[in-house]
Length: 320
Image 1 (cartoon, rainbow, N blue to C red):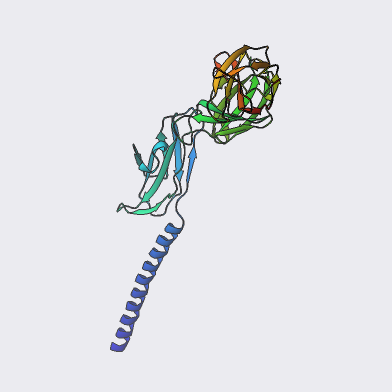
Image 2 (image 1 turned 180 degrees about the vertical axis):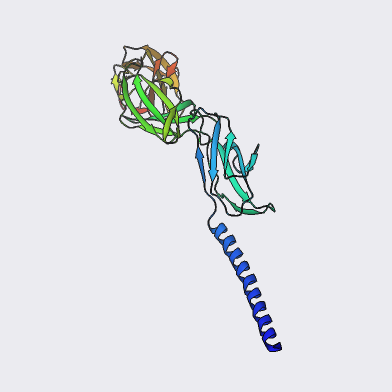
C-alpha cells in the first residue's frame, strides 16, 4: 500500500513538472511568435479634408489595452509633440491637422503594463487636403528641345503623393504639353523653345485610392532663344543671330571674352529683331584673333529666360 502511494506521488510530481515545463515552453513560443510577427496597422480617412483619422491594429491575445502614439512627420524620429491615446480595443480615432502628415506607432500591453506586441514600422497618415505646391524652379532648357523644373512643395515631408504639370500658351488657353509625376523633378523632353509658355503645377494627395488636388500654381516661363552661329559683318564687327521667341517683348544681348564668365550686357533690342551687330565689347573695339562669346536673353514683362547654355564663341582671323 505504501509503495502504491509513493508511486502515485511520483507520478503526480512528474505530471506537475511537465505541466510547468509546458507552460514555460508555451509562453516562450508566444513571446517568440509576437517578436517574429509584429502588429500591423491600417488607416481610414474618408476624405483629405477631414480632421479625424481612424487607426486600427491587430487584436493581440491577452492584451489589456493598446496605446496609439502619433507625431508630426517633419520631426521624424525625434517624435516632437507626440500625442498618445490609450484604448481597450485595437482601434482609435485621432484628431489631426489636415495640413500636416503624421507618423504613428502602436503597442499592446497586458494588465501588468508589459508590452506584448508592437508595430515596429512607422505609418504615414493624415494626408493634407491636399499638399500645396508653393512654387518651382526652372532648372534648364535643352540645346534645342526640352525643359526641366524642380518643384518646391510645402515644408511637411510626405505631403505630396505627386504633381500634375502642364505647359500652356502664354494666355493660358491652350495646353501644349502635360504630365504627372511622383518626383519633384519634372522633365518635359519635347518642349520647343520657340514661344513663351505658362507653366502650371498642382499637387495631390491620395486617400483610399482617391486623388485630392490642390490649386494650380502658375508662372510665365521664357525659353532661351536658340542662337545661330555669329557672322562677320562689314568692318571689325560681328553679327549675333538668334531664333525668334513668340511672346517675347524684347531681347538682351550679353558678350564676354571668356566662355563661362564675365558676360556684360551690351544691348537691348525690340521683339521683332533677331540679330544685332556688335562693334564693341566692354567698351572696346573688337580685336583680331580674339575669342568672343555671346548670350541672348528673351524677356516677357518681368520674366526673363535662363542663359546657362546660350553661349557661342567666334574667332575671326581677318578684317573685312
